[in-house]
Length: 594
Picture 1 (cartoon, rainbow, N blue to C red):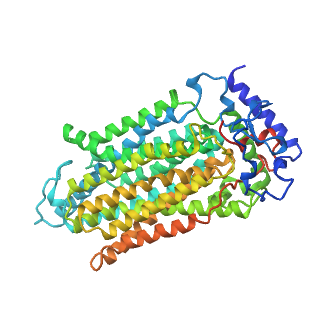
Picture 2 (picture 1 turned 135 degrees about the horizontal axis):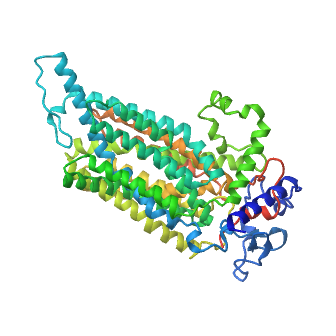
Picture 3 (picture 1 turned 180 degrees about the horizontal axis):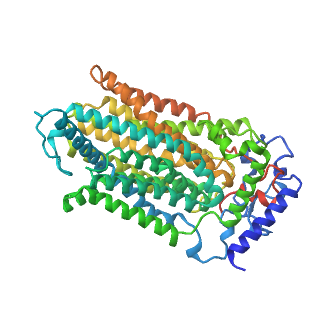
């Protein structure tokens, strides 16, 4: 029997045990008053001593050896997230190191076309405006608009206004569609695997760039408005927001809980590397080839290569057994809801708030502490993401008027800040995590919610961001402004730690759903952040232009206050199926790395 058949048989056996077994999921914690409903609130009592064996005595299960901390009914089983892949050769076992190199291609393609696409849209809209003006005004002098050239005739208010409106429409279409689809794509990844959703997301971006290429190749027959269709396809498939969320889900599947902040940091490092290097690489490509479309062809090649890597080389991180369990759980939930679960009725009753219910669980195993933690963590994450989205254009506008920076100076600033951020993510965060948690991250750690180290990292990261934006407010020279940007970039370690902390609060079969809900919040933040902070900047730039940085600093202060109310060691201990609680063997899901 091949491995897939073994995994399927195991899943069927698990489903039979879960549906018919008596409830004994959390009996090891119910004998005394030291445990809060829905989450362990005082884990120190279970800490093993220096003389205790780190992995405890293994006990057998149908998955093999299960390592534990402690003894008797208070034993805490070791993390067994990779147990379904035991016995497979190394090239069939999932790992973040399989996904990281091709994911860098994904982010380079994303970052590389940001500036060329904006310039291409400007050129296409300028061509349309010039053509319309020449038809309505015989005295109008039509100057040729050349792709890739400076085209000074396009620097007029009428063209700039059209470009701003077009970009706003595109952002709204992509952002709103992404907000709607992100939670569902995340939940689908729990039932059908991470790779199919990553492929779907990449295909959406690829189709969007194909539409852009056709529009630029045949500008006389294809309207620039077709690019909005490409943006809609990108939004429907989740855009880069779902790409990041599913990459985090992949990392969650194959990384021990106490090392997930490092794994998430690697993916964030890839993202910022792509944003920092992508525009530079595409600039040299356009300069060398003399065609702006060459950057889009290279991006298509990167997207296609990423899809091929997913199809051929990268192992799926969600085993058939886990997929079957998630599918069965979903089937039971649909049967329980009855006709209301019909997809047509779901569309009719859909609201943006519906997918966010996972952040406020009310079923068995939940508690007020869990709901508070999830809401606070999601709020801090939303604040940090919204500020990052809203501050990008403001920094460019502000440095232009305050210090007289041009493209060269701004490019240097962006390069320095993003380089510092990448170093913080792929060097500083792993080193600190190793020093605190040891070489494997197993010292006195359990998969029972985020621990104190996670919370300290989040709070320190928010303080770095707050100090950096306060520095922006006070800086009166370019050098001081760059130093403030480098200081704020150290706060980049907060985002992956927030994502890691969120995944530790829910069972593995709800990771994709949770990160999909976070993707919804990110999609909304992608819209609201720029709108709010650009409005503040526009209203105050002629009076006291540092006002927006004061508001941004205060926003980080609010995030820091929220982080102070997050409690460590809280976990959603819900049963695998609504019909019954999980068995003792199944409780291995709530465990620690070994």
